[in-house]
Image 1: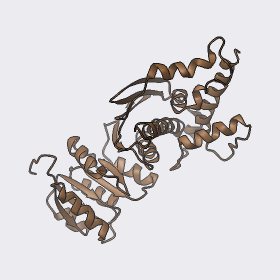
Image 2: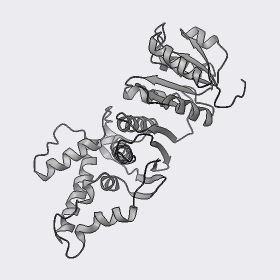
Image 3: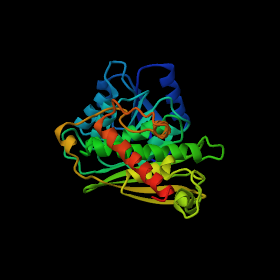
Image 4: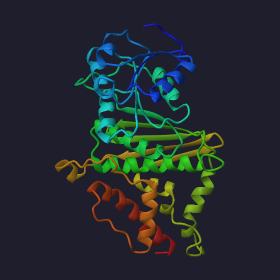
Length: 345
């Protein structure tokens, strides 16, 4: 295969024929890429290997993008694969991780998102695992632009990686919930107007023995870390008036600290970096039955609503999974500690 600069890659693209597919091809070509389009599985497998594959949900012959990815790996094709889909389900993302997909870009596409995914895939290129081949990699890296879909997408993608790595649901839920808080914070506060426009969010999850190391770094405005910490301990200081400051767990970063075992935070004009450590202690009910759900994490909006309801004594926790109940319990426990500190107990 010809070695080309990443700015001019040979791309094999497959999707259902449509005006949207034609526009995507035109966009990639306008960026200097050579794009070859194929309509069925046999054409894909017979064609020379490109620098990168871009696959939609399905081809004209009905072959799904995931099935084509598996077929490519079975015949030894190692070029990175970027998948594009409207609303991929949890099982789709899990299978994509297992098959070694470089990225899963969700439609509608944000400006430059697919170009960034292709560039990252080419930069990180390495041989991808074939089906049923033992996987030695326990690292997942993703890059996102700030947007309405980013919080849920990041949580689902990292959850899929953790499923593939054998992390039980009780830990997956709290890790994904902490990640959702950090990504939400970057999206809402990283831009001067609060919209997160132009902010880049890098996420890295690593399995390190019985721990998960999660790093989230954004290119937003940053903030004064010392001041933020001081504001969160103010209610416990001697002479402080009750109710003069929110409890630590009422803010996203406070909830993150309650969900992990270690939190290191640095921030400045060029962005914010948060490094979290999660200890994977044994959980008995996960050994007996595994609970899987596509949306089984505590998103920031739900967390804020839950805390408000708890303060009014109106929280309804019926119907939540055991894993989600553990995550909620850690936050509720933090609220109880905050309350005792602010009243001097």
